[in-house]
Length: 189
Image (tube, rainbow, N blue to C red):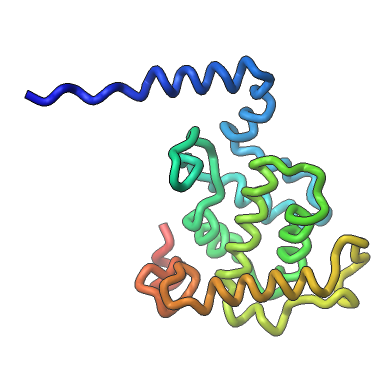
């Protein structure tokens, strides 16, 4: 007879207790809510995109090699749903670039919330794929660019998106059998 494996419940409860008792309740609260603080986005379209990402966040475990606490996250499926339901188009690229770069480089909020918003905007840009390439803004094209935003950072983001969409195994590549938009938006759950 095999012994029963130890339960993970005590470990989870201990972790939860530590997070809440060590002043982590405020930080943890953002993990356990669908709250991307969309009202703080700079434009109306950015708020609409943010609210759509927020609404479709999914409950998932954090971490990669080590399992972490579950939380609401912007997943690939979240991005595909938002991409199709809004819909997101090439005209949204300047807004997505500004949102993504702001939360990556300029925001003083380095929380999980900001990371989820960055993941969402990057995924939406990747889903636009080749259609996005001619529409990436330059510094001159962005309305009231901020001091932190440079052509180099915009170009770096563009290259990151190209790497995501050019790799045949990427869920953002139409060549992948796991392409998020395989069969078009009508097949996105």
